[in-house]
Length: 491
Ligand SMILES: *Cc1c(COP(=O)(O)O)cnc(C)c1O
Image 1: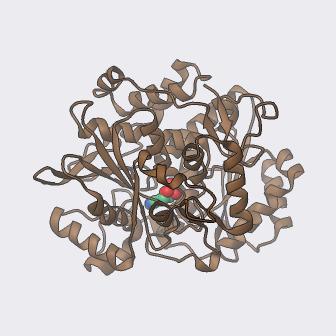
Image 2: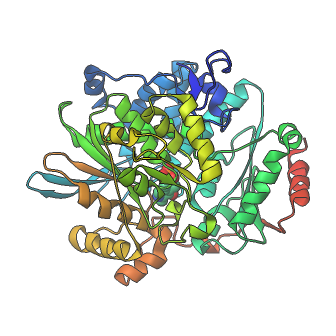
Image 3: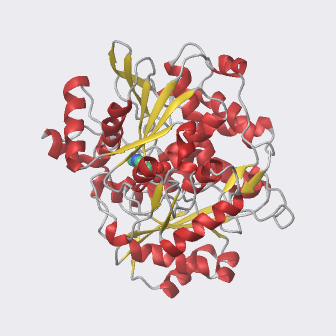
């Protein structure tokens, strides 16, 4: 199995074939594209049958070994066994088995209409990003040790990604994490989650500014190629291929748990922002998993919903990006979307390069096929199962209330976006699985607004705000930042 860039030039010019381990620690391909396998591995009916009985870690091994062909089976099996344990995914609800890792709960079975919730947020930071990031931590440590190398992860966060990265990398040999966040701008819960980590390889830096100031500092450091190389700087953003492929596993798991035979289909609804989560669903479907619909659910930041309704992809300016009560979906452009577009345009890298150059110059592209558009591939979208919908703050409040009234569980705001849109696309005879991307405890303010009650926190999180915190405060000063990194890496 080897990997190609979505913007690879002609075969003659393109770089040497990349293996899984070659692209594991990197982000974008050198040509600015994203990596994808040269072809999707296929899954047979007898494999699916055999996988029905497997524990999550073993299923993860079976799927990952199709992509990470350069990692010996025994090593990969040990890595998945260490990652997907009931101890790591211990925040399951009452009535759910933590050992299921992503337990399913049937919310509604009304005639032949079935609505199911698949919990992806039972990991250490109570959000689905743990599903991939926990594996990434173990994969990074394994690969770095093999090459006698080290890595300094440098990033900016306004919440979920930074804490998932820190909980995945804490205590890992050969890895340090330098994470910027806007000083006093995150919720008390999110701040406490990150800053209470005392591990010597985790460095929390509260920047006196807003999130954009943090991101500008990351860009400035990343653009200094000498510094980046000398300090062995890397990132863990959502375009990382290993993160996407780790997410493929739970689509298989959801399908296998919701069906009894391979001639059945299911649909998935995915609360979406950067298109990372649902991109994994697309890949599962391309591998042959019997998925009927992939439903993209967005909030008021409806870049993706607009594309899947009209064929027009129009990224938003910062001033047009809303701060909503499902903040992890507040994106202005969807960084993983290029992977789907590559397949949609028949894996024509020249087209992809031209389209995404147009995003840079004109703010988007149009595949609707209308006069003056950039192509007509929107007509093919249905072949890939994609449909979409969006919701707003009032919809979230209503949905949180209804789900509590009807089924007795409290869902978070992102999952509420999912349920609202799922209901618009549920079809007879095809179970609809909604991916639960966070636990409600992370978004107590909105839950309180919706149902007038605080959310009960999972065990161990009751007093998280009162734990001692380790962080430093810094002005948005790139030179200072570089000095701080160098001082702590000793490189
Ligand atoms: C990151 C995140 C999302 C969006 O996922 P994408 O992969 O960016 O589409 C949705 N919900 C929650 C809770 C998240 O943390």
